[in-house]
Image 1 (cartoon, helix red, strand yellow):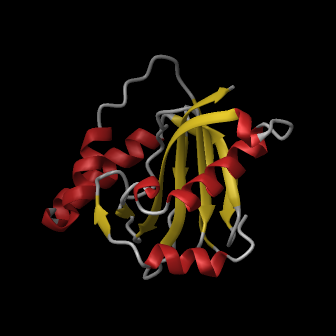
Image 2: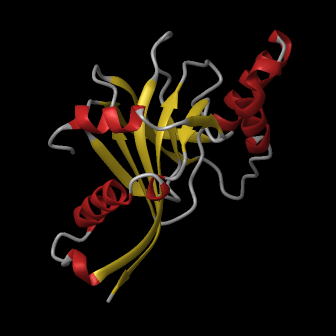
Length: 193
């Protein structure tokens, strides 16, 4: 994806990260507030993959893009979908890391009531007892039982995958003691001018 991914990793390492509840790990502040040029380079390249014959000067878009570092946790890997129209993930772990899988829903009209518990756990994991963590594991397995895996993508270094944001998906679990470093972008809107 990048001509010099190590330069991008160095830029990402210069940012501050915080726990935000969306993942079992940390995210940077939104990239457009940290490096507007990099934000535009990434998102225009993503959009160009979907619309290769459109001049990028004839496009406006809204996106939220982050550097993200996920830590190993058996309770990660919840099947979910995202807001927006396109979700793109660029893998930046120099050795291959955990990838992403795509799912289809098994049943119509399901309710996923435990997603908020996942977010609370991801934000406050260090306050959870062993028993509470086991309960989160049970809730994740219940959540994921409503879905069937249809495709998997390895977390190959400098690879970008993208899909419709409403597509059900989940991060695969990475190996213990190894972070999963990605750039994730949620493209919310694309307009052709």
